[in-house]
Image 1 (cartoon, rainbow, N blue to C red):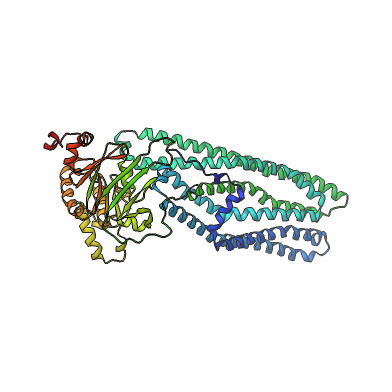
Image 2 (tube, rainbow, N blue to C red):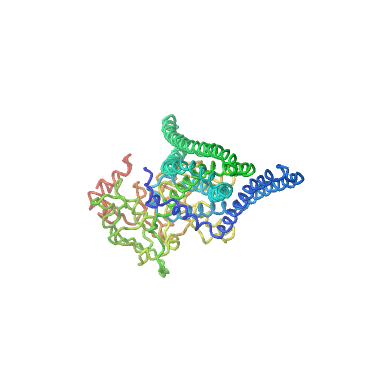
Length: 607
């Protein structure tokens, strides 16, 4: 799976891109402005020290009034104390806004990811999403709490400092500025180069995160095939690319830092020569020269920090663009403006000329579903049979709007499912997938995931629903777990067997008590005896529930009232199992391929 290309917004201007954080600041933007003002006051106290030094050198230290030496020293010490105090106040003031903005961005990303259609997640690597939601958001928090404040404050402090230099000696200040011009040249070159490096490095670390996640989730496969060393080699290659990019970034920073340190020092050397000459001519006093270089020393810190702050700003800009690669994604599966309130709850499900193709499909490529027409009557169980790749999984994902049809419509009780709000639709339609996904939570919360109405129910009420679902799915094994149904299972339920995970996923679908139950081969990991018991219990549930069941086993077909044959994106035949065996060569071919062991050789097949 390739990393999706950044959106056009990723190429937006620096300031426009950074400004996209402002909506997340909200009322905290006031505290950020206050923090910036405090930083400026702190810089003002720092710049006040050279002014006090000038008065000290040209006054008491020149013998005019020695008694004023100690008061002047006290003023300088007080200025330093106030500078330190306001540095402390600045950090305290901006800490809370930064963490709140961090929280809002994370919540916005998570909420948007939850609402985006499955097609989006099919395209994106999970590691790329994780790196944006974690690493990039943390980077933005550091920039908001420190980089933004100090970049603005230091830039203003430099302007103020240069203005003060002009008040003492326009000639020296002009020499200082002329000698500093190369800094702007190197800064501009640094920005254009570092922005690309930053984006490349952040994307690469997203690939590394994906590699880690895949290897952790696939640890059993890697170990069983003895491919751990190969996985390590691929991971090391990915990490090496990231390391190389970080080294190149470090060199770019170091180069800029070199010029930001050396050029001001060169400017000071030129100013020293010019200042000595001006003093010899009587155009400058000793105190003015002393204050000039003291001010230049104060400005050295802000000037040197510009390189780091500029790099942090460029990285934040790249991080913001990466985050908005997600947030700018449009969600096509949304609630209608005026949702329909369901009146009939019979569970009738009808597919009318349904077409589906992925957005990434090449022009001219046939639709995966090419005109599906199928009616599932209320309370009927319809088995869906087809060869691998015929589109069964896509078809079962459409009633719950995990994907949207590209043409045609699906009717639930006579109403287009796009006219229901999503919560209502997904309460009425429940799914159990072949690949059972469980969460790092208690068994109880996993099974009752779809029962929103039980949030305020009593323990006895929720236990009744839970126990019934576990009983039907033959999942009473949970009561043998250390804490029973309250046992917290591990990530994705990997501490359980495949059959146990499938039974819990099936129990979750049953507990939802839907009007339409969609089962994508939910019994594939069960042994024969357990499967038989589950099927017997399922018959009681399916007797009163409309069900669409993907069948990969002949025994699953036997659960159904009727069978639909999906072939080349269309429903080729519909009927009872016996009718299709008698009338459809294609169905006989497909059904015979469902059991590789040939166990499903019945008298009907022989006939």
